[in-house]
Structure formats: structure tokens, C-alpha cells
Length: 490
Image (cartoon, rainbow, N blue to C red; front, side, top):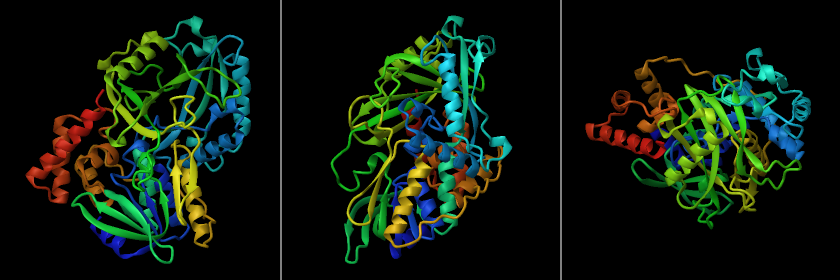
């Protein structure tokens, strides 16, 4: 990392990407593939904020049928296929189901039509995929067939089930990192814990971005002809622009499995207005997604103001969501003691104020000459939007924006339970700087439930041996990890 800092301060880049969530990581990866001299920085760890805390569904936009927005469906379908092809070690097919009932838009007839349309629109969904990652066609089950999916629902709540397939990123952290690592392998300079603090424009149209290295507070500047601002909920802050409306977004993790290996969407009784929908339901789906040894449930959105890094839902909000889940699924009998973790993120709000959810449209805006900003809200289309921004940068530089064919990422070695080898690789090859980087993103050990004290101390000891930590610094790293775990504890 120190070598990267020296390079950052001494070179002039074609492109600097500020922010290494999924949008920024994909922008840097695309730029490197286009042959642009690229730098990528993040104020914290790569992919360590909102991009690590989604519901982890790489979806093909089935919900956009109710908006008749076929272009957005196609964008999501193509992005899903590319994720499955690029990172089969991180993304796998996942069955989803919703109950059918009655004669309205949730009837078996209506859902059969919706799934047929979805299959037709996603006609090329399996192009280039291995058989193990191909997505089957959707299907509608009758009551008897569906009974196995709905053991906790009374039979009066359904007359069948609609089943379709999407992707599930069982390791979004490693998926985002894969784009960063591949960009670096193609010549990009990547550095985490480098915070952008301001920008000015020099003669000749070169941007001078002031940055501060967070480990020793060393300040310097990075020069680049084009800047892509992909700083997520911080995208206006570092440019000293007026604050934007934000929403906090969160999911809860429970030890229980409610529907086996099937992800399930159930209608909540809470009123939800979707002004863009042609087919209106006025309710929202709660999703129960099998993940690791339990279930992710969400997503909850609520207005938020302040520093995105401090956001945490209130105890009252968590209790209300547990009550909502138990109302939708009485057999769940969910209690706070069943929860293991919260996945927390912050996103741009819906500016129209018609719902507490973020605006589902991602966009790229152009500011002063050669400055592009990404407002991204969907992990699935982070690949598409990041790629689009990098191609805009290439054209602004007078360079070709034609990309070579995708190639699957190199699969990391399987260290099994050898945590010492995992720690060594994270430090030597994967930019891990803090104990949180190792526990939360290089290993995933702390993304289902907080690891026990013995595991934390062993990882701190092995990582500290790699980085030359003193006893005091090792204790400080353990305290930093404990503080994070308290923030995301249910």
C-alpha cells in the first residue's frame, strides 16, 4: 500500500475514481480494461460501506414488470448474467417464491403470465454461463406442490406458489473486491483508507484532488484528467456541495431458516406507495433470503440525516420490524434473541418523497469539465452504471470505449479453516490494513454473527505479526472491531 501512495502522489492519471463501492470498483475495472491510466481510492476499506450491506440479491428486475419498464429489466438481466459469469465463486442461482391466491394480480393466472413475460424478456439469461449457474424458467405450483415451501403459512393464505430464479451474491464483499483486484492486476493503482477532501482545477484541465491518508494523516494531492465521483452517500460531501436527502437501509440476520433453501417474498400489511407502478399493489414485499446458516430479512428504509458512517436503526425500529415479520409469518415466532447481526447501509433518498425508499434510478451527472458523479442505488446495476461512467471518461479523453470480452475472475485459493494463511494472504495480497478488513471482508467471518473472542484475538495476533503491530496497536485494533460489532449488533 505504501508503494501505491507514493505512486498516487507522483503520477498524473487519465482517471481517478473516488469511492470503491460496487459502482466505483466497476468503473475502475472498466477503465483499466480500456487501457486508461487509472487510480482508485476509498476513504475506508474497499466495498466496506453500503455495498457490503445489501440484501445480496443480484436480480433481473422482475418487479419492473409492474412499471412496464422493459429497458430497466434488460439492464438488470444483462448485469445479472455478467455477475454469474465473472464471479461464479461469489454468485450462484437462487430460487425465489411468492404465494399465489385469489383472482387478482397475485393469482396463479396472473403470475403465470408474469413469469412467462419474464422468461421471454430474459431469453438470453444463460448465454455463456456454465450449466451449474444457468437459471431455469419460472413456474407456477399448485397448492399441493406449494405446501412444502409454506410450512409456516396457513393453507388459507395461498393456493399455490410462483417460483423464479435470480442470482444470490453469498459474498458481496469478495465480489466487490474481485473488481478492485482485477483492476489492479490490469495496472490500476488502488489504495484504501485514502480520503478525498477537496478538488481544484489546474491549468490544462487537470483535476487536483486533495486527499488524506487515514493511517498517519499524511496529506497530498492526486492529479487526474478525469475524475469519477463514486463516493456513495458521501458523494456531495467531499466536493463541499449542499447535503442531499438520505435514507438508512437495513436488513436483519436471524439464526432460523424459515423456508429451507428457497428465498421468499411475503406481502406486508404496511402501506407502500409506488407512484411509478402501472399495476398498483400498495403493499411491499418482505424478503426472507437463505444466507449462510440462517436468514436475511428486509429491506427496511427510513429517513436519515447526518454522517452516514454513524447510522444505526433504533431499538424501536428493530422491534417494530420484528413485529411486522411475525404478523406476516406468525409461525416464525421471531424474537430479538434470534437475531445475530444487522446489515446497515445509507443511500440517496427518493427526492419526490412518495415513499421512504431510495429512488431506484441510478444516474451519472457531469459537473465541471471532466468530473462525473454517480448516484447509485442498486448493487445489481453497479456493474452497468460503473462501466457506463468509465466509457464516458474514455470518450472525454478522446480514447476508444470499446471493451474486450469479459473473462471470469481468478478464484482465490481455498484456505479452508487455516485462518493464519487467510490473514497472511489478506495482508500481503489483498490490501487488508485493519482487523475489520480481515474479519468483515477478506474472510466474511464476521458477517453472519460476531466472531468469538478467541477467534478475534487469534486473527489480531496473526495479522499483527504480518504488519508489525505492537501490543498496544493490536489491542486498539481489537477495540476498533468491537466498536463496529456493537454498532451492527441487534
